[in-house]
Length: 267
Length: 169
Figure 1 (spheres, chains in turn red, yellow):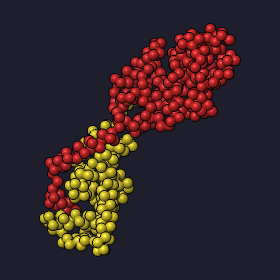
Figure 2 (cartoon, chains in turn yellow, brown):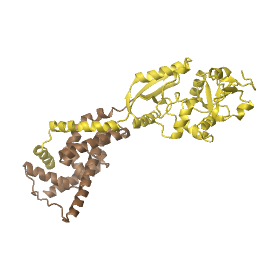
Figure 3 (cartoon, each protein chain N blue to C red):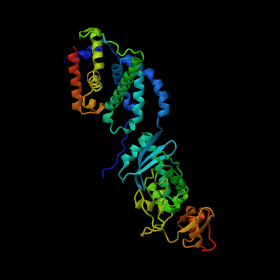
Figure 4 (tube, rainbow over the protein chains, first blue to last red):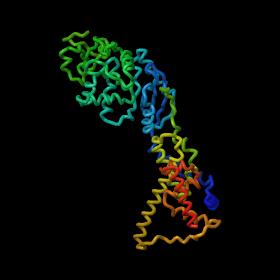
């Protein structure tokens, strides 16, 4: 074809050989490197592990855990797509296994194992960041209600927003959204399946019954006064919900450094 | 439900490494200027890195990056034209510089120069499509992806471009 011939002619009359291209690429390289320093996304290591809670997809950046996804639930691709917007992903099973080992230790009774820092880069809203930060202050062996958590964020009527926030938690288990329950004492829902919520709560000392309610031995602890009461104690009912945690039993509350109320004598 | 197996796309640098020369060659042919080509290469690279996470499948990588490069070429050509107009107005000349290229296609550098000019006079999409087909050797389907049109439309653009070049002859 004639144009093919003409194209060849152009190529031959003004040849661009590979050496010239390489030289040009070499010259642009330092400029690209400089610009990339500003643009480059941080790295995150991604891996898949098996755990007592099922198979998990785990992503960890240099700042901490960026995402955990329960693989028996759809949407792993969406999680990866979200991660790719914020991070350059590299596959690294070893990193994921280290996190997996921490989860295993929790199931062996070592609650301090879950102290890994988290990287909330995937969280866009300030309200959600505050909610996750205040949720991380709820210790293992204690739970808080959606209403209570909303109050700690300064918006006591936003329990529904808290519910949505927990549902979109990018780092479940480590940002312990399994420690948030309903105000009526039932354990509520969980993004990783209610079974896993029960497993995690049981591992942390909450013997959740078949009726999916908190154990009858549960006590209410006041974070500011350091006193724990029976749920029906008049002092507990008057207290600010933002300050109240629910402990599995008097022993758990004692471990957390609280003392028994002298009115209702829960111990 | 099928079991999930982790399959990450390759890191950006690794993915585009093999296309560096091809892109630079395309830019060099499109702009005809070494400095412009290097500028646009850098911009193509940075733009591609920025939007790499939005690329759905690696299969589309080649046309996708050519699309970025050709968009940048088009933007630059448009900016040049605007700037040219401003200068023309300022000098109150009103007329564009006369094109005194010989109006015949023969062998040798003159014919090549004429072809280059003829290509630069083609409408943007036709010129881009022709460059991708004849100089970069892309498939019509790839050109279609790069120019955001169907493969058929890409083929038609190349055809129209060729027809005009022949009329120019």
